[in-house]
Length: 188
Image 1 (cartoon, rainbow, N blue to C red):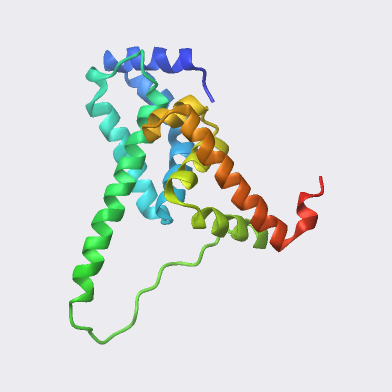
Image 2 (cartoon, one colour):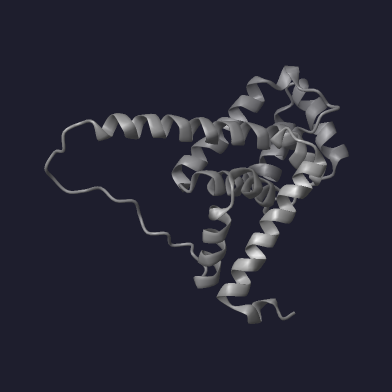
């Protein structure tokens, strides 16, 4: 991941509508943002749309960027907000669909999860999804996306100490789940 100085430089260049800076930020953060969106949404097509919309919003807001604030945190915050908005809207759509009369025909189903790496990965995902939202978010941003406590705090709008508290609780829960599932995994 690029340094904070690099992000600050990109921020200044973006403010000046530098297309190459946008391409550099895109290539640096596209995959991590997509992974984060996937954890929040659980749908690759929707996550792809959210990340695309995030970069569109970045370009639209480029002239108002503050080089003294974390560009990386801003992008994660945009993805987070878009994901939460999508989930809120989905609940509303699903409620409306539930009131419609059923129609005959073939049921449409989502494609199988082809990227599952194995039973343990599935179990870890299951345990992470069981975490309260704030703990899960802190864990994903910190451990899976490699963000600092400061960056996670900025995204979640909490103090770094609160981020640490969320992480301690999340890791304690997962440790307990691993202990109950397969204690030998902790023997290292």
